[in-house]
Length: 335
Image (cartoon, rainbow, N blue to C red; front, side):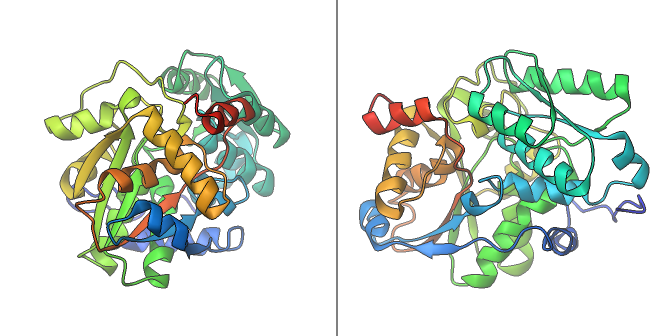
């Protein structure tokens, strides 16, 4: 556990420093080995435009998602007193799974808040890790408000999925692994819910490979960060109705939005059908399961195909926790 001393402040719009990423990697490495980075000839052919596609398999993490990095990074800096009191987080699934998993290993009490009607298989997994599950609110953003209230009442430490420097530093470790293994990458296409992956990627790229272009993608039905990016200022969204759980947010976030605004090479929106097709394509060409958010990077790459023609591009299969009914709808073509 940490002594509680905060790191030195970052500069400009960047919420974290590269040194924080290196330190996060040191903390999480005993629990999380590097995930595979692989290329598949059938996937290259399907994407076309002469693009060489490198897939970062975050679905191979213990919770089947990159959020395990974020949570472990954030929870290994807690003071002994914070760890004793316990933590709380709001989630649609993967962030909460990461927190609950890390809490089990570190022997920290965890409370996880999810919206009513949340993915039942993710709820089952959360309970399986021993977390106290609170089902309240109509979507992720309302569950965040619930978690803030409970944190005040029970004096718990909030592990926010985005507005936490150590969470973002944890997410950045995956890009550090990608660039170290494939320093010839020319672009990365990253899905955005809160923005930890994208801001983490840009933080690493600025230090290790400044020419690396980072593109963001978001669901049309949960487009608040995209629209805020286009407008140059945060604009609250009205909808988060997407089957891509990890993208289902209605707000841009104060810790990531300035960096997204300053550093992204581009930002595109995806339909439900485009993400569903990317799930099917990953299953066919890599034989890996992806949830909607996990396949969004591929869907965005396909949409950006002409712009990225002939380049070596990394995408992140960020999560595989798709429930059985949603998978049935995707595979059958209903989505």
